[in-house]
Amino acid sequence: MSATPAPAPAPALPGVWSIGLSRAHIELLQFVRDKEAAFFTIILPVLLLVVFGSAFTGDVVPGIRFSQYFLAGMLASGIAYTSFQNLAISIPQERDVGTLKRLRGTPMPPAAYFIGKVGLVLTVYVAQVTTMMAIGVALFGVRLPRNPADWFTFTWVSVLGLVCCTLLGIAFSSVPRSGRGAPALVSPVVLVLQFTSGVFFQYDGLPPWMQQMSALFPLKWLCQGMRSVFLPDSFQRQELAGTWELGRVALVLAAWSLVGLVLAVRGFRWQRRDDG
Image 1 (cartoon, one colour):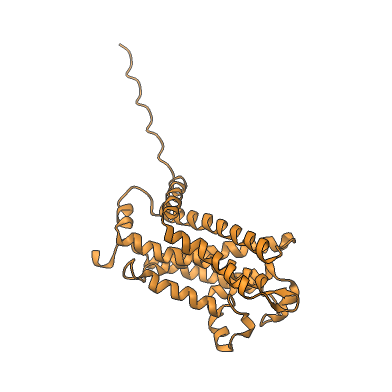
Image 2 (cartoon, rainbow, N blue to C red):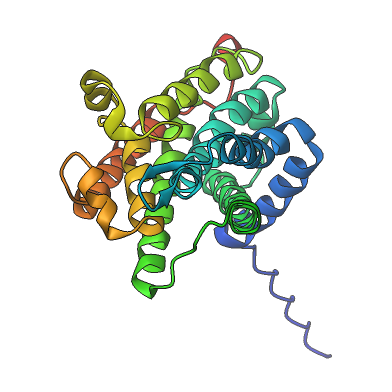
C-alpha cells in the first residue's frame, strides 16, 4: 500500500513591504484619477512658479534674480503640498467614505497602508521637482547646482522634509471632523506659512515678529535649506544668522519629525468620531 503523499506547503503570505508597494500602486492610480488632487498637488506649485517668475523679473540682491530665489521656496513648498496638505486632506476624506474602516478590517497590516502613502508622496514629489526645475531652467534662466555637495544637501533636506511633513500630515488628518471640511482647515495653514517663511517674499524683509513665529515651524527651515542649494554662498549674508545654519535645519526637521510621529501614533483614527 503506497504512502499518502505529504500535503503541499501553504504558499508564503506576502510581507508588509510587498503589500505596501502594492498599496502605493493603488494610491498612485487613485491620485491620477482625482484631477482636483493632482492639480493642487502638482500643477498649482508649477503655476505659481510661472506666475511669480513672470511678474517679478528683478533681482533680490544684485546678481541674483528673483526666479532663482523663488524656485528654492517653491521646492520647499512642494514638500508641504505633496506630503502635509495632500495627506491631511485625503485621509479624512477616505475616513468619511469608510475606506479606512474597511481597510482596517482586512488582513492588510496597518503599516502597509502608511507605506502606500509614503510611496505616493515620494513619487509625486519627484515628478513635481522635475517639472519645476525644467520650467525654471527653460523659462526663467534658473541655474541648477553643479557641485555634488549641493545635490547631497538637496537630497537630505528633501528626505527629512518629506518625512517630517508626511508624519505631520498624518497626525493633522485627525483634526478635521469631516473630509468636506478638511481643505478649509488645512489649506490656510500652508498658505500662511508660505507667506511668513520666505517663499513669496524675501525672508529678511519680513517683520521681526513674523520671522520669529515662522522659525517655530518646519517650512521656514525647508526654505532656508533649499536656498543653500540654489543660491550662491554670498547670499548667506542675507540670512538672519549670516549663515545657512544647515545643522539647525536638520535639527529642527528631525525634532518636528519626532513630534509628528508621536502625534500620528497617538491620535490617528481609522473611523469617524461619530462611528464610535
